[in-house]
Length: 126
Image 1 (cartoon, rainbow, N blue to C red):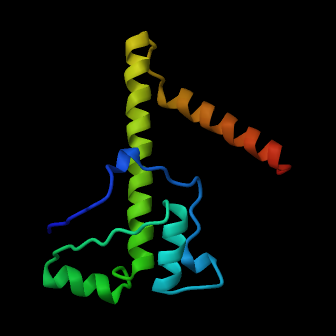
Image 2: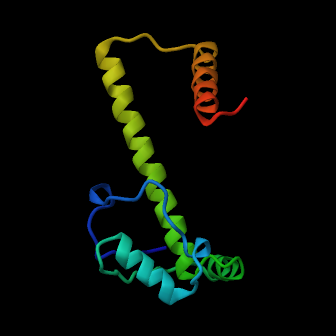
């Protein structure tokens, strides 16, 4: 598979906290996706071209993954995951430099449960 990309490095791009996908709007289709993307990412669009094996292209097309809306969602989600991983690794480096001892799984579970309980409390849940 090969791809060309005329845009900026993904690390320099800014993405909304929670993207609005075309399926979440009253308007759908390629034209609405272009308008949403142009509005969200600074008014311009970039055309990309990829090469896939016939089997992969057929499966992706049948699954609806080659539609502009689906590609937008897949790429945005992948970029967000990459940014989260980079942030986590940066934090891990700072923790190591500070000499902080690693947490056990039990300690991590306790912290996660405490954060979730606080979120539920703030939301007025049980």
